[in-house]
Length: 320
Ligand SMILES: [Ca+2]
Ligand SMILES: [Cu+2]
Image (cartoon, rainbow, N blue to C red; front, side):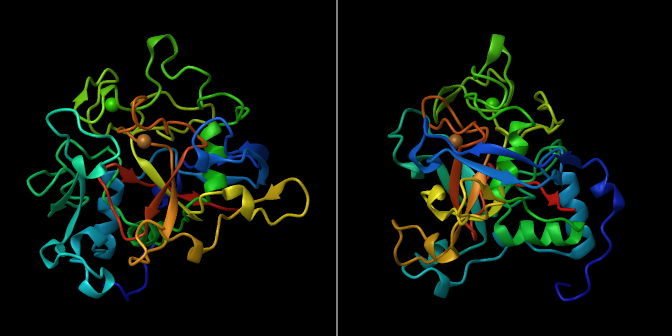
């Protein structure tokens, strides 16, 4: 029923949202991956944000109310993917499928499987289900899906700057991690990440091999959980590799920055496939010191808007 008027969002969806006071802060980092450069002063107006990533329980309420069919549940159209093997053009999503032993870490195809039948309902492939995962973040949601959810809920998706300010939780943005300078302070895991030899030997010292129920790790000072780790989260910004260059303000502090231009967000490595990309934030349960140290507020990743994955979710905001 995609054309019928959106039903009223249940009021409890908005209850519990947390106010992030407007502030100026240093966005990005000069000390980590190149795409986080340059560290720059920005100012962001205050907004409300969901305290947790959207859960399977919440997403199910949305699907039940609207009949929404997610991108992963629809076979891709051949004309959108020139050169694609027709046998691959089936409803599918990317599922982390760890190999038995060590593999070259440059080759992501060694652990990402284009899994037919995988979707938010079957997060670990066709034979999986949501039993016991009701309070885990929903995954396998593409950009159109998270936009549809936000519209139904009367909310919006955060900008990268809003998300990054919220991830600092009111603390100054001058430490290595959102909670301080140690990844595992005093042996306490602060987020669901990957321990051990990536991708084959997860030792699960933090207690979770896959996603975790929201709130399994400590909240930040604003009361937000799972900003770091668990699942990557969508933001509205079009991805550009050098975000500092799109600062529009003539003075030194950029106000409510919005990211780059859509046309500049295509993947230069895939010149035939012109799918724009958004910025993801927060890292996931697959970030590991030996492979991907993106369990930090400044870290970012480019994601094609048509793609969904087993470590990718979202949360919403409301602006005053
Ligand atoms: Ca983990
Ligand atoms: Cu990572």
